[in-house]
Image (tube, rainbow, N blue to C red; front, side, top):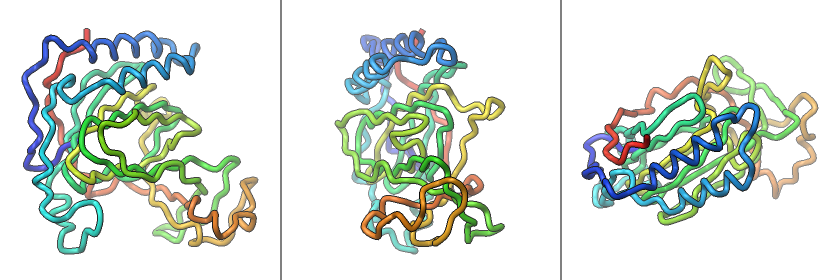
Length: 269
């Protein structure tokens, strides 16, 4: 994802690169009948291995310099910098979309954020192409454990367990999340200018029950009682409490600032 005064530049199309075509061909093969024949673990691992080799130039990007930090990086952002933080948009770049999978990129400026959101029933591959990105991700605790949220409208909050909480710096391995594990609900925060290549299958389709929902995470200590057949809250020890959070559904954040970019890499056929 890229923001505002774009310092990310799209390069000339690389005619000799075939990695995008290789990705497309493999996705087309393994996801073509995902409803009746889900891809094998070996097929998914092969996709991750292909993604591990992808470089910015393969998708028409030139790595952005980190000299546009403006003094408000991921750590220690103060109130005076919050306007500047959202002044530049994240750039969304569509590579390919069909009924079975989506290939896309997000170009981020420093400190930009994609808030905590889910991927219902989806498998998602995220390849960091350049820069550094903080990833925080959760998975739902099963069976569900639910409390009444303290937020507006007293919405319900559901217990989730922390799966990922780390800073990635390219080059690094591709992240993979699954419907029930691997961090299906995640938040991305750009530590430096960075870009992520995503492959999602099946794609978001609200009419098929795959709507992108945003959440606010409350510390585990924010609530003391829950209901339903979920784990007993009292059974979570104090030293494990930081591994859990209560997630409450929210509207799409008003400060999620995103714009459409034009893909400049090789077009899969």
